[in-house]
Length: 537
Image (cartoon, rainbow, N blue to C red; front, side):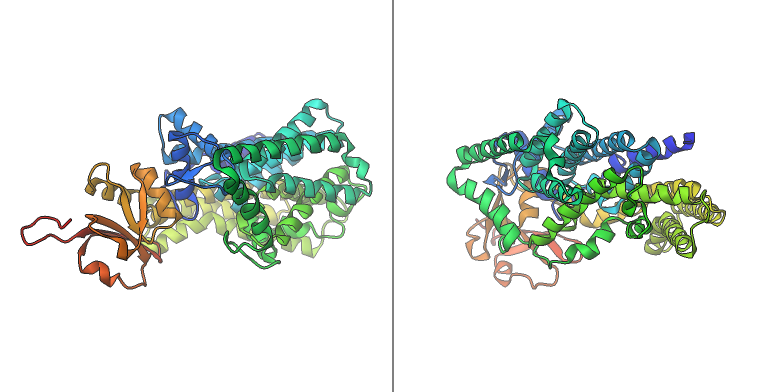
């Protein structure tokens, strides 16, 4: 492997983990998760709270982790909250590199790490204040330790790591993490045609450990919130989410992941399609890594079957599957690289795939600069630099493909994706942040309100209930227009297309208003002054 490889891997690891322009909290999810984490930092507990009220959707480990990040930096901040996801993503990449380098080869590990680091869903989650990156880390640790036990006869340390990872996944997002890993293991046993393949994991002893872990979490929730909290955690957020998520939302059709999975894996579409070639590495029993490929395939097929059966679906739920998919696709890429040295060489379809993947990389490299030019209707020095760099990368990539230098083409494509990520963070995200970041507006509202006064809000949702306490430390009191009484100020959140509240205009006047995206409008209203100039109370 050439020295340049290490440069590419290092750059991509940094881009996927920590390179962030310092944007604000965006919906969905981020304001809520940051608000819960601030309250966990101020009042540590087993049951998280949102705006002072129990929020029992998720166990506390993620919020404990973010609260610890706040403590390390001296208080709540967006950067500290986002660092938890970034660090989890970096550690996941490190685990994948260690796993694949031990199980296959250093070259395959480098390719798998780069592919995972540039998946669209991975990059998004690495920069998002959201729980799923931490779940992905623990699930990946479980996969690695399971493989070491089953595929390499690893020592008892890997057995301990396997069950520790499952317990941590349980305390991060509930039963879904262990269930996904269990579904993958069951699929692997079925593909291997012998259930004894999982014997090194000591499943019966492990079942006792897992039941004890679930029981301890349930007991902790019950002791803090009683039977209603336990029922909400187990029934509403596990049974209802799986069967019919009326209250929890995100209900999608069975085949939802058929089109969202390729989107999550952008830009690596050609290696994804190559997995289905009948003569590809996944289907060749004589392949040196046949058992590893079967394991990775099982850890993809089993979990995606479980996710598809569940009524509640989101693209981010695919995150724990991405490391195994990256491993499979890395083997596919390596097989394509080695095929150029074999006789006969790959045919027309393989070459078409090379050009298709090169086109995707080339377009990705120049896309951020092109978007910036269209939005600003002009060329800035920064966008010009990115456009020239992207064009040079695309030309070098086309030359490598034309010369059948597939290994060189892969690493140039990886560099092009690193350039694309940097361009998105430098050119695109700051412009979107200006439309979605609610922090400056909420801070301005905070400066107007009387000290210590709660924020009375009409039309509040989880976003408002999270962002207001996070930015101001104030509580939100959700009210209806008829319940205004004599409140001197009221915050109103509404759809930009909805008419204003007519009953509000009679006694209140708007002070500041701002739209966030095409739908959300937030306004601060003040009670009109009486004839003598005093605010009516």
